[in-house]
Length: 490
Image 1 (cartoon, rainbow, N blue to C red):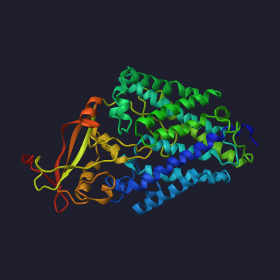
Image 2 (cartoon, one colour):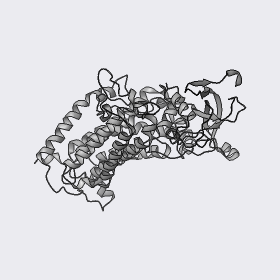
Image 3 (cartoon, rainbow, N blue to C red):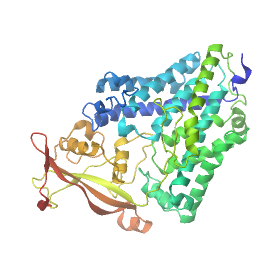
Image 4 (tube, rainbow, N blue to C red):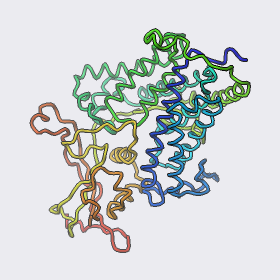
């Protein structure tokens, strides 16, 4: 009915976008089911009840605004994971165009309900990115109709904001990005290094300067080419994908990089894919029916809404006081993005220790709790966890930078003193095997990657030096109150 409406030569793009975004939702809901109750549930570190209080006369936009329980949370997460799995398999896409539309909007609504009560533990830019991506991808339709061209263009606009916003925040935020020295430090001080981070850190400094230069090119120039005619747009998308793969290879940034890679496919047409992979048809899989009028109207209405909401993030891109990872509405649609506006040059890590000793002196036997993604044991090689999101580990990194804990860290220490099973399941190592320690404390260390010579001599992956005590020994009295050690005992 409307010939310009369908982009029949972007079938691969639609398949990657729908299945890829659904796969990330699957990971997000599994992460929520595993971590939310211990972090934010009825006995969480930041109980969700405080997020459900009215703010400015309004309650958060969430299905939990009327009632929250850990059981209901798990039901919502399980339902979201099930719907995501169906979309990853591509089954709803064989139905009418309304079916994947409704299911993606259900994912968006369910995860919006979680994020809006997730407080600090859900305050990451990739949460809003996933919400925005899920909402937009909902309007790509099913295999019966060609992918709507307006939706594909808006996803390109999302990738543009994501990349160009990150590039601008770097140029405005830290001199090290401007003088090309940022990666002298970043691989070592990033929130959660992976097995290749040390190798990347030890590359020669000229290579690091080239990395930064390449980053500026990929984030400040290439995004404009996403809107160019083919095959230029496909080449620009390929550059975005390659740079994101480098970030995947050298760090753990939850699903940020994977989702960016998926979204970049909105600029890759079937003709370009066919030129590289002749087995893929040049015009994709032809639609079996013309888009019904109702679908055209719904998609155009959604596009108009998104265009109207674009004013605030567009203005933000060129503002001297550019906001990073900000939402301008309650629905987390058409957001502002950015990362690492400043680069940490010194890695500080907080190590939590406990003891069974009656007197918490330095002579007592203190045993360290182990986290999954944080550096702890200097001999332990960092692991790869992304695209899975270790929320507590990330907050511990921010805490070491001087972030206010808003009470969650104090509650974490209390839960460790109680040997709370849900909390201990968030950790890699409980040195007391479920037994309650009598005292806990938190020490601060300076960590750096071992040089090649230090690695050969000591076998260690990290070198560390103690900087001081963050929290002096704490215990729990029988009535649940805090018991502080006598300073003369330390």
